[in-house]
Length: 190
Image (cartoon, rainbow, N blue to C red):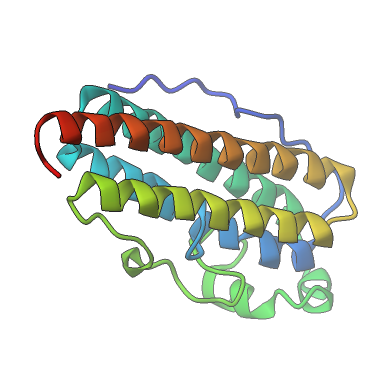
């Protein structure tokens, strides 16, 4: 089903460590509107959708979200690579460090561990697609808020790329919703 290309969708080449920024960006790894939840949401919903096209869109976007998860992990790793204890303390990274060292762990910027309770797979294609569109808008908003916090162009570039992909996903889900509605209407669902 998948072919893994061993390169990121957009290059991540961060030269300056920044644990304060890493604490914020980790939310797109495992926060309530992050990439892990998005990938699981779409890859779960694909099983109960009603058209082949919708299943393909959910599979494609869910798979792409896994690539975004990989990018966020790479960003956080590069922002925290080889931090000294002094840098950890100065950057306010102690709570994360005490729990996870310099590992990558799915959590929100507030420190809450990832939970599948942050997303839904209802089994109703209309409901699920509206949820998906809302999720893409929440992710877009989060990326925009992160961009407001970023001064480093090496960090801003991949975050801007990810924001743009959320907009594309929103549009694809909107198109998919219209096709699913047509299908359900033609089959007297409404």
